[in-house]
Image (tube, rainbow, N blue to C red; front, side):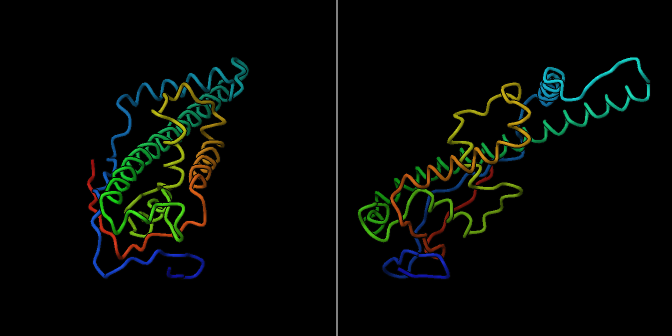
Length: 205
């Protein structure tokens, strides 16, 4: 085992690199009907009475309240699109981890690394850390939250299923908690996979 700072890395025999399955990176297309998403956001703002409306008092005040309602709806849409983007990344990462586990199982020199009764050993979260160590381009995506959201939702629900509180304040905490619980399912201490010994192709979908 090799220790660098506060991190422990598994030492592999030899000096060669191991080829892992390709990681499919989600593209930019996130939702099919953005107009429908915007409509759901407007309905959420209306149904939850997020902006108080006092019609008829002053046209200028009415116009300002309508502007605030629109701004809030746009904010909710942006948060929802970020949620979908994170979920899609998490979906790709979990499938990639499954493929990596099959690869490890098929190679005698890698097979023991995932066994919790052998120390040091790696866990499923070690593959997430490996993606970070390989500096995979991930614009505005937190990998732990991406995996956490995919663990929480089998499919991304429509915006109408969420409360404004979840979209604005709670989704990050829920995702982080789900990821931490999932990572701790593998008995510790878990070691990291040495990034210089593994390679994988990035495929943008």
